[in-house]
Length: 171
Image 1 (tube, rainbow, N blue to C red):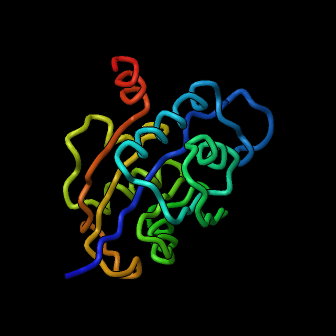
Image 2: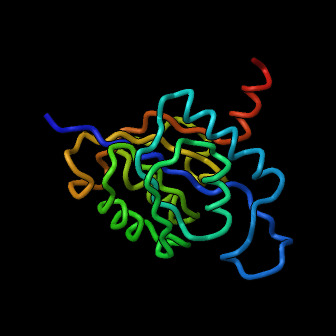
């Protein structure tokens, strides 16, 4: 029986389009700074804590990662993940060493990556467009990330910050 690998596939939180500077250095806006901690709490509540992180080198992905407030684990900031296509993201994922990997990137690559990796899409209206800070929890029955094949993942969770924040205010 194969070992289990888990992927937390997250798009960065909402960024500030009014900020000066180049796209790579664009920071989060106020909404993004609220969304990322909420998604960190959502991950923790489900027991999906990474032991390896692959993160785009952009400012907004770094800020999202920091605001998740997850335990410190080995982290690689990859310039190649900045606005990466799905194929590039999968190639980088194949080099991961952890059993539960958080990959933090950008659209459209992040949504395409999710769409290609899972066997069946979750029944969620936002999965197709993968809004900012949207997060998929994908399980693979493989021994090593190098064994990863498209269409073999099981989506065990998908959430967007707006719903997570709204649910937290109800409780």
